[in-house]
Image (cartoon, rainbow, N blue to C red; front, side, top):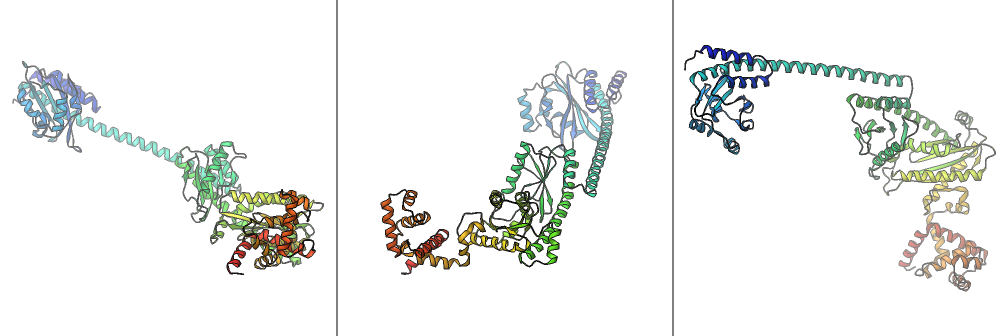
Length: 627
């Protein structure tokens, strides 16, 4: 082939060269190459430009000028496939002069590509010409032209011009590629600059937040000020909760109904841990299912509570870092408050222990004055025992330890709001309350109020699902500090009564025990033996009668031996009552008109009411033993 171009071909080449070098946009370059090539080579009806992808080892169509369909846009050719692939492998301008040569070349396509070609129902060209695009001896693509007129064909000068155009295309593509690389580099630099500026802004904002939090701590503003600042910063409510989800502080004075609902859901989630295990705090930041985010405060082994963000909106890095930093700052505040609380509890505990010995020294009087305790006021002691609802109480202290402050605060709210000159001391498994009353108080009204608060405290513990229950002993009111030890002893006796005798009561007052105080001076075994000694024959006689005689006797004694009142309370006929009383006297061998018998029966029935289950078990055992 003559390598020299004619004057006309040079003009056409210049035209093509000017067109494809008029832009550095790679996509525009692709289309310009094909458009100009088709315009200067008369035999070319259609054409397409393929570029080689080294990663995929395929030739991919970048510019397609077809009349019928765009099947080539979905066909990827391997080197050696079809006319384009063959030219890529040969690296020389290749002419396919007739339909037969074109058809043979297409048969080299893979089965998948042939299937796509057949599905498109192609019309094979009468001839084709392909030119490789070479850069430094490396083929980077192929220009393929098709002729669909039987009376036209590619001439040698067309192939020369196509080859020259492919050289110009190689230069233009290289320039466009360099431009695109440079353009991408500039874009990346700009993006990096934007990211650096953004990071600087975030860093400055983060430093400002940390500086502000540090200032709040240094100036002793406290937890409430920190929460208020976070609320302004995040524009959403922030709550400080203890380990069990109870509210310690809030960024707003009053919670809305929606905020209360979210708080209750958080508390429910925290209470969902099995009650039989020790309290297991969340140790990592987590989003709740109900639109809140919890940040743990303290360490994994000593969780002090949670910072609750009442919003489910995603947090950016600065806000998250600010809340984590605030959690650390608040943990220091809580540790400080906990240390103060423990110190106060130790001082009050030592004072209470000395006071309950009954030995009042001048030093103790001075300490009482320091604690704002007037030696001449009236005092009352309450003992609150905390017990496990499970039979296994080995982890009782582990349950109580994390909530000691919470329990103390609840007791303070219930009892000391009205009587502020008292004190509360948290021991290992119980609370000691020392209530102080001024002159002119109504003891009956105060005792009614104290019992109401005891009921509320017991219900609170039950509702928390901590696996705990309470027993409260209430001593009587004593005048002066020197008599306080007596009230403490009475409170302890009340707890002993609740422990020894089956009762569903949450609390008992020493004053309300009445004659039952005498029962505390004997063991349960002695009392059971006494009850069986007095009531044994009656219990044995009617073991299969649902204890109707015992019920009748109890009602008769409760109604002070009055027949009519007793019959009415039992809803039986008077003659039936007379018969039953007569039979009871015969079975027990007593007379109810005898004062001694009356006292013995009253006491024995009272013991039965307290220890009935154990008495019945002892009776069954005694019967089995043949006694």
